[in-house]
Each structure stands twice: as structure tokens, then as C-alpha cells.
Image (cartoon, rainbow, N blue to C red; front, side):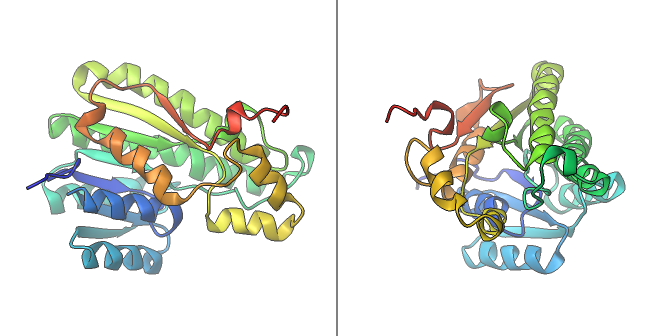
Amino acid sequence: MVMGMLQGKRGLVTGAGSGLGRATCLLAAREGARVGILDIDPAAAEETATIVREAGGEAIVCRADVAEASEVEAAVARVVEGFGGLDWASNNAAGGAGDFALTHEIDDRTWSRTIDVCLKGVFHGIKYEVPAMLASGGGSIINISSASQFKGEAFLGAYVAAKGGVDALTKTAAAEYAARGVRVNSVAPGGFETPALSRYFEKFPDFADRTVAQHAMRRVGKPEEVAEAVVWLASERASFVTGACVQCDGGVLVNSHML
């Protein structure tokens, strides 16, 4: 019998109600993991849980706004209680990718909420996931950043700034906990098929072809393709990897104007 990469591993995913989060939950379950499904939208989280269970997986649903420390703390505690520990986590919840404005036109509410969800939310995840993993004998945390933080992205100043912070925080946490058995890495996606990208194209329909052309592969990715990188980092197959940023971007950062 072939064992999955995460066979018997206990994990959680934030922002698991759709997109990359949902794809990660499903792939992790297929690879043998039990999954805590965290999302601010309980109906979306339940829908993800139903898909996971129909595929034969085990899931716990938690409603949590990652910007609120107490809600993340409670959700992590519930997952630990339900599964008996925590071995891996993907801090995926995001916000602000659908709010488009030139930097000088970003309002304070948009800036604050984007930073709260995309950066503070990752901090809250690490804050409560690490103690649970130390108590479980070690683990792996994967934070979702963005390829846009390496080059900037017009109209998405708050989002890009937050994602840059995610990678800086990832490296710091990796340094702090490596010797104690907790690995911390990030995945930086390029454009991929999500509701946020759909909203972007709705507001800027002329940008669809340009966005595809930004990718050396001349297409955007599927959530399942990014999930593969997340699940690999969560597994023991990446046992010597920490402090890394895996670029899963279809070649955005190597795209050449010569081709």
C-alpha cells in the first residue's frame, strides 16, 4: 500500500474556503492528512470540508478571522484538541488583492485591513501554531506570499507590501525555530485562477492578456499546482528545507521581453 506524503499528519489551512486554501486541503487529505479548515466564511469552510470528506478525508471546521488573535488562538486549540496535536499548517488567508488603486489613492481602511489579514494574520498563525508544533515534536509551517513582492504590482500597493513582510517574517521564524524542529517556508505564487484574479479582470478587462503574457509559460496557474508545493513543504520530503521561498509563478520572474 502506497502511503501519502502526509499520512497521519495533523494540519490546518487558513483561508480554506476557496481557491488555493481549498485546493491545499483537498490535496493534503488525499495525501493522508487530517485537516483543520479555517475561514472567515463558515459556509465556505463547510463546503470545503464536505469536499474533503467526500474524498475520504477527515476535517474540522473553524470560523476564524485571522486578523483577530483570539480567534486564531481558539481555532488552533480546537484543531489540536480534535486531532491530538499539530504537525503542519498553511497560512494562506489573504485580503486586499481585489482592491485596486494607485498607491497615493489607497485609503487607510483598505491599507489597514490588507495588512491585518495578509501580514498580521500570518503572524497570528505562527504565534499559535509554533507552540502546538513544539508540543507535538516539531512541524512545518508554510506561509503564502506572492511573486509580486519581488517586482511590485501596479494598483496593489498594500497587498504587495504585506506579502513582502510575509517573506521577511518567514525567514525570521525559520531562523528561530529550526533547531527546535519547526521548519518555516513560504510559497510565492504568480497569477492563478482565483476569485480575486477574476475580480481584477472584471475591473481591468484589458489586463487579462497582459497578465498571461507576464508569465513565461504564457498561462496562469491552477490552485492545485500551487497546492502541490505547499503539501511538499509540509511533508518530510522537504525535511532539510527551511527559510526558503518556493517560486510557483509560471516563470513571472524569469519572463523575458526578448521572447
